[in-house]
Image 1 (spheres, rainbow, N blue to C red):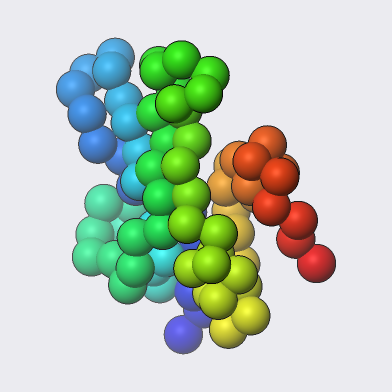
Image 2 (tube, one colour):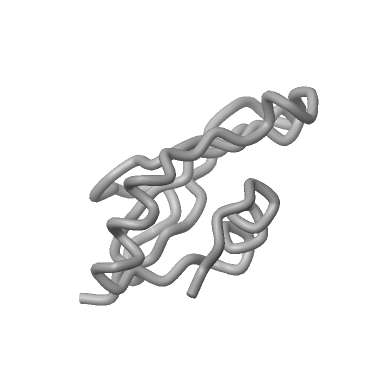
Length: 83
């Protein structure tokens, strides 16, 4: 099973917010998740946009989970270094 760290969309039309989740790469975007590790609100102010549990991210990366391109950029923006 290939595990990915990616975004799961919530919110109304034109007012999205996303949860940063760990899930099977073959599953649909809004299907069941393995773990939730943070959220991303693109409409909020800059300081409230991203919240990530860094310990959980490092744990899942150590287990072999691969972040999506968008999540990778969010992690870089938050200052979490990927190896």
